[in-house]
Image (tube, rainbow, N blue to C red):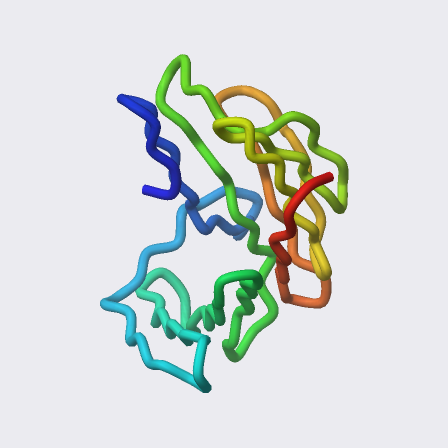
Length: 140
């Protein structure tokens, strides 16, 4: 899970539009390695399609990109349990303002866009040039 507060659960799913259908991408076990002093790189080989996702993360930055033989229309969906309380105050295409226990912070899309498609999807992250790159910052 990505977020937990009491019985509230939320999680990100990597999805793609393929042959006119929305599918959830499935993968094999990820490989995690430390790069530099404060970064991790997670490589997640896919089962659903040829290729892999490469995720690089640190305390203040997170990036994901798809590496494969073909271009793919992929994105991330944040779904939640019913009646979930999320920290989002405002969602714009490039910035999400958040507050948790009186701590204000923002999530900035250096590459990619945020949207709120509705239904049970609280947030969708769309890549720009095959990359979603986020920065986490105090205040807003």
